[in-house]
Length: 496
Ligand code: V55
Ligand code: FE
Image 1 (cartoon, rainbow, N blue to C red):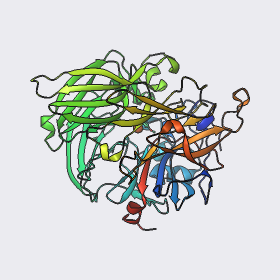
Image 2: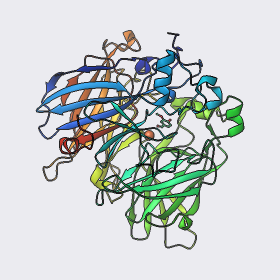
Image 3: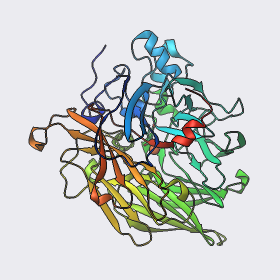
Image 4: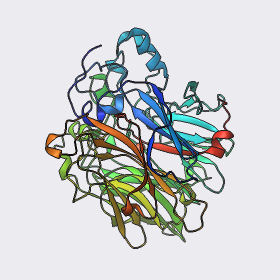
């Protein structure tokens, strides 16, 4: 086993743990609400082997799927590697064979042609199946009961796209999943596939279009009428890849664009609207129709939020100086040539969470992560290379913000939302908080912390957690998570 680089991608909450385990009946402080009954799945990048290159990044790490199973007020924890083709090839060789993030030209020749996706970004539940996704390849199906990898998912052979987003959107009314894949026709291709799967998980539509430049389309949004593709000038370049360089470089001088088409329409109906120059978004919160207006709410930054995507574009700006805001773009679709109107909605932050029932609909509030101005800095780590230390609840109509902080030096990860059956109750948020074992910030050692799952009343986050589930473990930083109810688990297509 080689050594891991001592960079932000491998220290603090990014310390490689490389441990598959199961632990039952975790210690619970407080009381788990009875209606929190199901499983919280999390995608955790965690290298099985030390990387080939010193400048490797957390986004390049093997995907693990973690599960908090919660029933009858008790909680169990499990974590397993997703057995991708890449993971299995490296397991056999007992070392890393795949090189830089999304650059096959840096791989060991022995793995030429082997699928290099790592399934490390989002667990997606749809049509009675669980998938682990990463945007550079197709999803892998995982058995939700055993966490065993079932295999790559291609809709019974129907899917043509080589890639599948980590951010599909599910319509709460129809149960359909709207998704896309970019670089759908191969490395650095302009092809984007736009697909729909019905509520039972059958592919009903797949159409391809070309984006204006080869950008990283991390997320998109739907409304009741439209499919909306906001894209930003962080671009791939085949020559740079062939020279062994970075997949992505941000271009501060190029415009953003919004592609918008009727969601059941033809891709030929897509119109492209030019947006502000140099900005970047990884996650949209939501979008909805308001008469002829379409509102698109996003976690926007003035430049790319990932330091390595800035650096590759020659942009040198410290992480703390990056400005941003929760931002609304409004488009009037009744205009012959629609434009983008921009206004801020709330403080900067990312990793937004919306109630599933609000997807693509007018909505009153959402949650996301941010920095607590009263808290000290969180421990180093996180998939971007910077952690958050606050959870926000925002009322999008009036900008009212409520905050939940965490202990000094702690880091908080993206919450999952559990709806409540009680009318007027906003439900519950489940979020993993990594808490330094030493409460004194001056004595904290990166990587020495304990991970807890906090359950928070979603309408009263400032009150803090109603239950703290203690893993007794230091878990590596997650990317995204997904809540799956007991009823859905019991109806899953794969059995335990
Ligand atoms: C993101 C995460 C990724 C990735 C590209 O959150 C973008 C943004 C965990 O992997 O490959
Ligand atoms: Fe994401």
